[in-house]
Length: 539
Image (cartoon, rainbow, N blue to C red; front, side):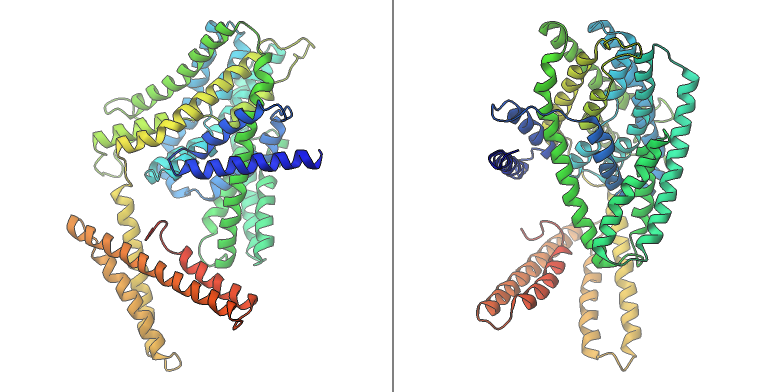
């Protein structure tokens, strides 16, 4: 590649990332912009043909994405919602695969085996697309947990069935007993390998206390859990999930330094954004390289694409209604009683089911699985229907990622979902306990003559103010409104004071009073103080 070509690539990347930054302000999800950018870029005459290598996704990038999602997820929430996540990650994948296979067989006239390959490939939702959109919209935490859990665990289910479907398509044989045994083996062995790697990784990271090495080690742990599981034909996804959940649970507290945790979070946020950007752009770039290879007339392909896309969406929406409606199956989503608590209001529950159903986007994992299908059978003959299912799979990706991704923000606003009051109350209670614990300790320190009294008094005033603010928040709407206004005013004033200090610091450097080293040291402290403030406060 010449310097001119590299310059073109960099210019296209700059335009793409600028478009993402601008359109996100208008509520357009980043995955949608990246896929559409890839589609446009792929048809430019000076851009070479690009094909998404399946090994790059399944072995190179998927471990990082799965590990990061698990690392930032809540094992407690997964355990609380394990039934709902299980139905979405296992049963819904199976039902979707069967329904899509039937439609592909009857409408596109594909063989049953290759139809099931398509069904298993479009079964799993895309973790990157679902969670990035959900977090950006600040959806209720429970919905984000369900989407994360589903996207994490349905990859493992779908890939096991996918392997069985590919074997049936290339060899002409299928064993139900062997498939069932393969699922059990993949789950048990994959989770076991992940836990072993997680325990060993925690032991090693706790003894390093060097942020750059810890960050590099965390990347290695993603691969050290995923690749060995894949090598022994277990579930690499579940191995990475188990390792990530275990390490994420133990990253909190005093086992990891605050400095390491801050750098750890910043690095992984940047890495995952770049990986997702590369994946979604490659999905768009790959389209024109295989769309012309699909067999059949354009009209029949268009009809089959519409039928498959409609099946994928309708099956998920019907599933959400069937498993969430009161009085139906026991594994219903959102209206089950838990621990004697009153079930969710019907209107809110219907809104949650609608959002969960519409958030079932497919992405790079679906396309990577389809591109990984062999081109020939075991007998050496061309595998019939391979190019067609790739075209149909991309239609599903485009319709769900772009169509549903573009309309999901408006749907969330229309439904009017907000964070659960129980989670808000839990956070308030926890912050109250922390403030009281700090005040009790300050009372003990006030009796210590070695600690300056003015330092203790200043800290006590700070925590007393925080305690009064938290105690003023109650079920009374007026009190809560006053508390919210006070919190926003407090944050705005603190941000203004930080800005004043930054300008004073810059003036000191301009006058030559301090050098660059002193400036960076103090600026780092101001950055940490501002980072602890709520997002968007005072803006």
